[in-house]
Amino acid sequence: MQPYPELGLHIGGAWRRGRPGQPVLNPMDESLLATLPHATSDDLADAVAAAEEGFAVWRRTAPAERAGIILRAAALLRERIEEVSLAMTLEQGKPIGQSRLEVLRACDIIEWDANEGRRLYGRIIPAEPGMRHTVLREPVGVVAAFSPWNFPVSSPARKVGGALSAGCSIILKASEETPAGAVQLVQAFADAGLPPGVLNLVFGDPAAISDHLIPQPAVRLVTFTGSVPVGKHLAAMAGRHMKPAIMELGGHGPVIVCDDVDPEAVAVASVMAKSRNAGQVCVAPTRFFVHERIYERFVAAAGRRAQALRIGDGRDPASELGPLANVRRRDAMEALVADAVERGARLVAGGRRTGDRGYWFPLTVLADLPDDAQAMREEPFGPLMLIQPIRDVADAIARANALDFGLAAYAYTNSADTVAVLTDELACGNLSINHFVASVAETPFGGVKDSGYGREGGVEGLQGYTVVKCVSHRTTPLRS
Ligand code: NAD
Image 1 (cartoon, rainbow, N blue to C red):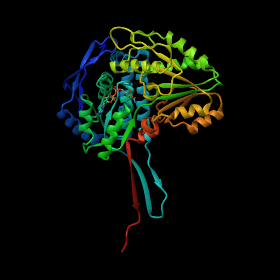
Image 2 (image 1 turned 90 degrees about the vertical axis):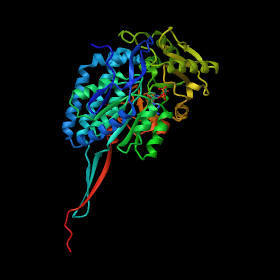
Image 3 (image 1 turned 45 degrees about the vertical axis):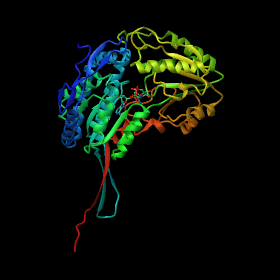
């Protein structure tokens, strides 16, 4: 088994070396894993031409045949789970168990999309006699997709699974920092017999690639997962060229903990959810609004569980928390913690980087956060758990809705009345009650406000890769 795959660009059904770009580092010890291949402008032009040719073939392929190929790719990915997971842990740092779960999740997403692609039904609208109005859902065309470094396999899988299942072709610009996941995903599709040009993979300077791809007339949709500033930039560019866009951007997950739940149990579940991918997750639970009657018990239990987390090499199955994925996140955590403590927050656990090499930072619990702490407003995108006391549910809702983000929100309560209020009042795309799973393959996922627009997953996600055509047909011949 290769611990780390050979990297390449995939254009028109063949692998290319590209030109040598930046090093890909292991965040655990900063050792060199590979050199990233960069696409030249000729490679990008070839990718667009290949995707156009691929689309011409794929859109005319029967949905059942398309589904068969896509399902075969998912089956191959399942077979290769150990090598794909190991490469992910090496390049991204997450513990191996989480890498395996991510591969399984990616397969589930791809499989669900493949099957649902056979059910992209249109409809017939009742009309006057001799007239028939038919609504069709057609694949939008060539998709330009940009995926991030935090989920090297499942984020590309969402975009590839959706686009291909709807009958589109795609040019994927995957993360330059965690490229192996996308390479292995694309290899599975190639081995499954996907026609050339339907799925193309490029790497390089992200701005140069988006500047090249988005204005191309052949590109008909832009999908991006990443930060709010980059998302706004790409959405504006897509708008200038009249391209629809799916924007899955940042969040600042509020968690409302009411006084009718077991504070110790919810605190432990919260630490485990926060530790997933070291908090580098757009749906990570981050701002914990805990009822004042159970506040101190919650803070103490969260602190104990955070201190007991096993930090270590992601290849060790006992590790619960790996390193952060890059030096930017570690430096950001240090700055956010220093700012919070300076403004009067109570440091309950963690708070300081560890180790001389690699980007290690422990799960950090901060209580009594003042509202003006930077971490309460900026997405930390790391292992920070920020806890504030609340008087009542109305107070919590006001705090939860106070930011420009609106992605995932969570609440713990056993009151149906409280659930009804939260459902009506929280400004978010996904609300999970009494658990921390923001979405599954069959449910739509996405944000409101600065967290973006469009959905990934579910029927809504698949429909995002289609355009509607309405055909109005007079069935009686014209007679003079
Ligand atoms: P960043 O804004 O520098 O980059 C985010 C991603 O966007 C990277 O994958 C990068 O390749 C890509 N990118 C940057 N400029 C681009 C351009 N002009 N065209 C196309 N792609 C471009 O941020 P970062 O330091 O990598 O990550 C930090 C922040 O990004 C986090 O705080 C978080 O808010 C956000 N983020 C969000 C998600 C998510 O799942 N929504 C994932 C990763 C990062």
